[in-house]
Length: 469
Image 1 (cartoon, rainbow, N blue to C red):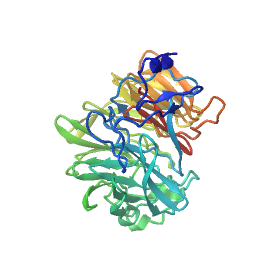
Image 2: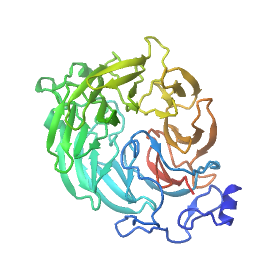
Image 3: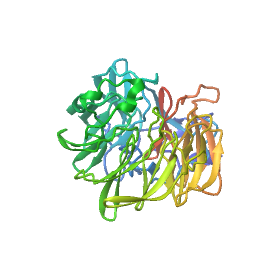
Image 4: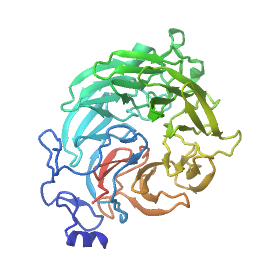
């Protein structure tokens, strides 16, 4: 009813859009305000849509949080209005948004492909491709796992086989490339490369994890004998690809390096295969290494560190659980850590938990059948509430709520409150009430939000929804 009133009163959706019957799919009744040019770029000025870009993994501030306001909280059974949707290639990651464009990284046959689309219409703009022969050790799909990173007119992609590319954002032309597996001697991990690079000033900082020649023959069942060769983290000149430094014997994980400013100093936190490395990202000076990994050979670290003030939280799902550290130049101290045994505060698998007003929210559990959404106290790790039965879930924060995508493709809106699990809306995204679901299992990538639009992906399709009128 509120949607109908909004249209009647002229509080229409972006670009004069109105809602049709049934599932509330958005239809166009005129050209969008701030019309994109031939290259899909949105002009600056008062006609440009309000909101924020999402130019990297975990968003503009690297913490899974959107600064935008005014979201729709009444969705209906099919979710917020659909703006556009598009079939995807093979991959697990979701794209990034900058300057009116959506960049998606997938695999089609034996080609890894970066596709550039108009972010508001889904219109194809250009593609960049390179040959790949990556094959997953454990039978998961052979597409990319990481998200594109957009910075100062350049786009960076890191493939599952270890190819690192930099291309121009306006046309996809190649600027530079590095075969990191070949150059640094990377022994293929269980699921290939799953980390996303980060930009720090003039540097592109990447978790690489190379090894010496004597362990290059290690296979799927003897990865426990692989050691590092000092290239756990490598910084490249972001414009030329020149190596500026390489540090630590740690091996790569599936986590992404977290950058932060603490006490006026820049920090980098890499939750590598064996634990957390704290370092100064411009110089590469290492401050500390905090071991944190299960003793199981087949365990992985995949959740990105969460930084609040001078404290850093790491979490994994195979044994140790979570630990909160307080950091200072040259050292770290433990605030709390999960004790040995079965009782753990937070065991995030591949999702990254989100901090909000003194509490941490995330999906806890190694296996989907046992996973539950949890809220814990940041300072103590005490569990405030838990919601079982959802399977693995990913969260994105916006406007006092979490957009929650469970692996079965169900989209939920949850209040960001420590008092209890409060579900505001739930939907299976469809074009019509009797139509097939557009977001299918396995939906493992957290949704992203840019300029009022919510982007969600499942196994084989990307859907753009209108979240903010």
